[in-house]
Length: 635
Image (cartoon, rainbow, N blue to C red; front, side, top):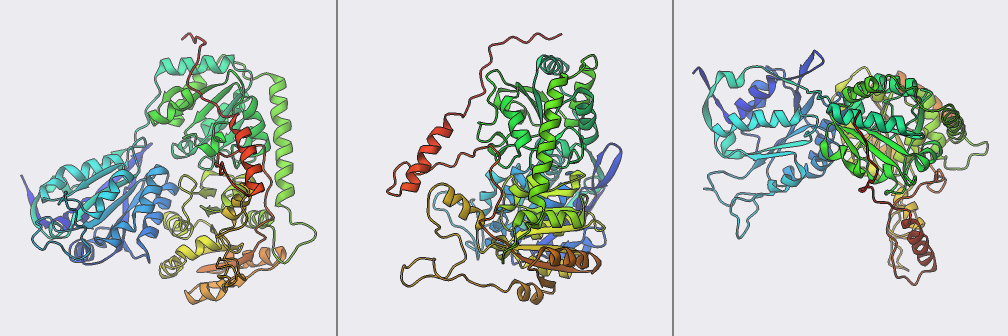
């Protein structure tokens, strides 16, 4: 057997540079590069290997300002490439590695492939304990990296070089498996990284990983088709799985042919253009009037590529028809079976096409239902248009909904908008008019503050010519603003709209909704009289702050100025930041939906008592979806 002598770290670099994914005949690099913050746990091992071989092998290294941010960037890159490509991320032992934990959870929850390479303590345990090593009184082989185990879809610790021969191919298999993908963690003890081994040349050779497209079981498809034929008020819910399988055209054809209204989740928004006649808008807690009203009376739900989270199902209150059934089309078996659903386990596009064939002799939904859908859609579009329009009388702070409307009008429906946390995800889901899946990038599986700026970097690296707008609240900006430096260093053209509502405005609103007075969420100084953070507002000059990190920055105080500055920012190269003050209390009203946020059962505050009473009443509408008595006969 022909071999090549390399260190473990050098072999890892060679191996990663030779991995490819392939779907529908299109091949691309699986690992596009390595995000790295070096320390004593990885600088002499993986750092040395990347410096010697990385650029030469087409595996460039990127330097972020924080370890959490680099994993966010990798996850955003993976999402924008439909999970066909991603980055590796390496950090030193101790705090460098544990800084990646939050973003690892986000990647796994959102089913996005990222490869994490945290450095670890010495495998030989001679210099024991080393700097930043965790000592456990009972388990001497435990390190802080064991915290990655529940957050990862795959975890391994390399304690001998030859373990790489089996571990790395399995790690690549999980990364490229659409049903299993998420954070993949391979912990690397610092001494093992530097050890030499004679590696089989075949192990380092180019390898292509096909992205599978499994077809759902024909018997299950037949059952689902019969349920659709019997339904009088069917509703499709589209999620991220439809986007990652490129199922948009197939879904559009299915909806048009059979008269099926399609409601969107956060991850599924844009799979159908907002202009498509059967797109009835968002559903659930942050949903719209059309989709939520249709959901309430739907007798059949076809859930395509969605996890059916509590925001989508309105904490299991959205579907109130007494005989409602659920069909789950999902490549993940557990997701396909949710809400007691008829499980179509398979690729979303393949499943939609199989359903279309099985329904070929069905005329589709009845004319009255189609007319009702069209009317609800028209009413919803008018509602959206009204809230997107700037009010005639503007106050000192702008309305966030109108800010989003101006922004969407200027950049259009194909520029990618990025957001993750606060009140903006809900308003974006309702108001943003996306014409394609790549135009809408809101991380809401984890809703992780600090995601937005790194995600903007990841999307620009995935598609440098795409117009990208990062929407970030002031609270989230303060958590990860340093990544502006990374964007500047990489020479990226990026527009950042910093919406300033004076703190954690979203939770401030939720706090009041459950009856509590404002407490601990607004950006205020401590008041000596009360001992609490209810003193005067803390004024942060975000314009100077962004400029100090190398960005062009402007303060915007009117809708007209916002439109003008946005147009100017699109013409200018580099990183541009627009700071827009908005009113934290001028927000969208609810759209006939509910979210289960438990209210204190005992309180001396009358507002809390009233909120608890309303909460108890709303809980009466929650349902269990596990039992079905009707018989479905397979044709």
